[in-house]
Image (cartoon, rainbow, N blue to C red; front, side, top):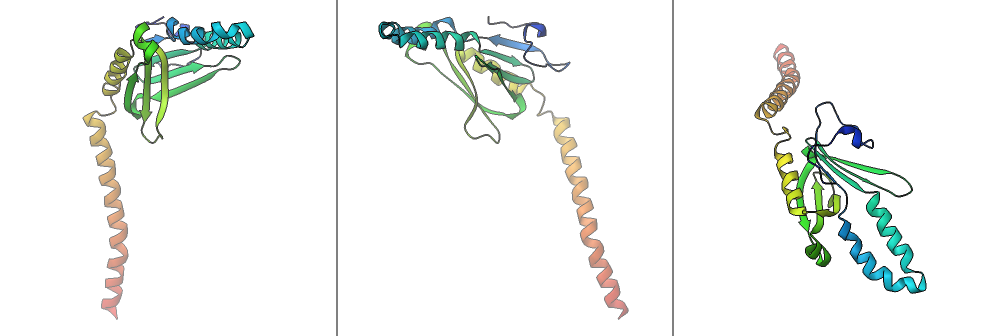
Amino acid sequence: MATDQSSPTQFDWISLDDDEEVVWADTPHKSSLVPALVVGVPLAIVLVGIPIIVGAYLHRENTEYVVTNRALYRKSGIMSRNVQRVDLGKVQNTTYSQGFFGQRFGYGTVEVSTAGGSGVELTFDSISDPKRVQELINTQTKDDGSDRPEDKAAVLDEILTELRAIRVAVEEPDQEEATSSDEV
């Protein structure tokens, strides 16, 4: 389901802003079921493997990932729905990894760390071509507009105005003390 231009109606589980566009969307790779099959099929003889296989399948079918020009989304949950959102402006670091089966079958994990978060905040598990997705997230993070020079100038102007107000507030009591001591 890897898409580059998807309609917002396809993702009824997220509310996109007016100027927010889906850049990439996918579900876990079909081959991510291989490890569950490797473990589950031999254990199916004693009926323990069937829940392992069914659980892996349901997890895969009920997980979706979306990258927009504003945020990253992850939906998961079999009996309930859990939607996680991370704004691109908060993304500090992205990494990707591929395990043994991932290297052989072409899937991996992208991990996203955020400012103020402790460790990995969001993961895209078992996605196709994790390196490309990591590069896409990094590109979107740079292009999200949060580091525009005019934004920085506006913030610096606000800080300067606040500092001037603090200076005036601090200097007024000093001037009043100096005037009252001259009168004595």
